[in-house]
Length: 424
Image (cartoon, rainbow, N blue to C red):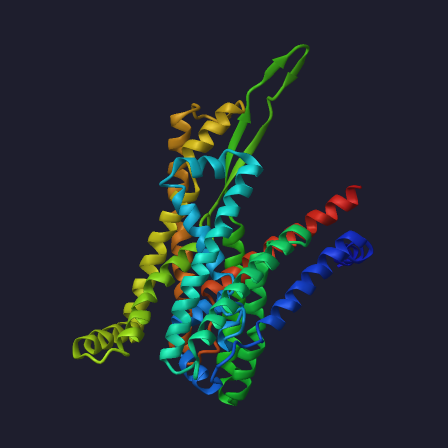
């Protein structure tokens, strides 16, 4: 307790650290204000009916920080920027120069790579905004819009997404933590009071045992997510001794940490994107006056409504995408080459190809556990909803992983700032 109070004292007594924290809070307040300013021409009643039960828009709503549920000027959120970043990372598999820029050119290369991601955000925001506004207009959510009004709405939502991207980068540069992650985190946390309110309105004394059991399960799940998110497999690394002049360098040992959940939350996002395409297609086919289109739409809706089929498909896709994304982001040959260049080697393993094969074998094994973990977390909301029958009593999925990851990362950065100031 005294250690915690000492850290709080350092945070609020140090002017630089205090400014960073208040700057982050200011940006988050501005973001929440922007997320509540609707675009012109919205019918609130039809919007509420349209969004209820729509899983695709529910996922987009997470990355918009709740802005989509009110069709705000920030309704696209940081989704286009995240999509652009993912596309750029996937392109590193196709274009070796991009991979070299991202992994080998240092900070300057990463900045250039991030600039390409920002530029890609603009057309992605335009495409996503146009598709979303068209869908909302055909569904009757946006009413009495002229061509000029549609263009104005499109420009507003693109500008809102770019503004949010800029605000996230301001947090990263001048505040504490990853800005984009903190914006998503703020939107998820802002929805908690609404969920508690819904649960309070549906309060029934007979459900008290179930609610208590849910709280216990929720605590265990959150603790498990924290443990697995932080879990690492240390690989012992030794540095060869080198004699330069009259001095000897190296000769010490350390370890290479390989994370169990190497892919993070990305596999769940990929899987959701693929699984929610049928719902998007079904929604579009329902608007077509054709018997075949209506039959296909009905079949897709039946698949989505089948919790068992949907859950199994979801789990399998998350499992496969975990291996895929780990293979994209973790290159054992590059790591082996970097170790060899720096005079380091894995204890008991020859440098070069044997080291790469050894690292590949380890990452394949621990990714199995990470993939099973992500798959279970992804379908947990479906399991809990089917058991409890109450949509408010559900925990897991993308939101939980994002919240846990952001909290842990932000705490680490704050503690790092505190340690640096204590050292000074």
